[in-house]
Image (cartoon, rainbow, N blue to C red):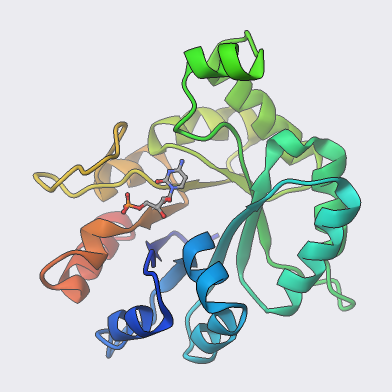
Length: 232
Ligand code: C5P
């Protein structure tokens, strides 16, 4: 599975995202479309970005009863996205139903990855709000194993967890990792961060990079820097 840099296109409107993508004359970066853009611009945004030749990670983090997730995944699959995701907390049956819904008549399907525990959830909140008393990293690995058991392709995790996920679930199990910053760059609100080069060393399969590229003075140069550090 090829390593790649995915740009988090966290823009509020279709106009802003196209203005950004128009900067790329030579490359067709892999883009992540999140809830803000998808809910604001509607499913057509996916079709239009796809038509321009980009691969798409649709980051909608589904979590509902298995039948509902299955039907929703069928719709996302028909949008021809390359990768989508859900919450592993929805249980193994929900994840199995998602795979069923995603799989097209010809047997192909987008990659499906799971969110384990959100990085905004810490040990204290997990214990107090969710009544989960196991150590956070054990919960993350358990959810990753559930995702693998359900037939998913990988998980979203911190680059710092990528090695452990590979050790637990196998080298082929994908790690898609946000929380990436250039050495000496602005950290913003991310806490546990690594550089693209370090993410490569730890074994991430895909890095998701937002503001270090989208807010850069020269986004194309920043993208190229991320690719050269991460993919080589
Ligand atoms: O701008 P920045 O590089 O921080 O963007 C990271 C992207 O990855 C954002 O779209 C953010 O929502 C997403 N993400 C994250 N941490 C997670 C899951 C998703 O930063 N645990």
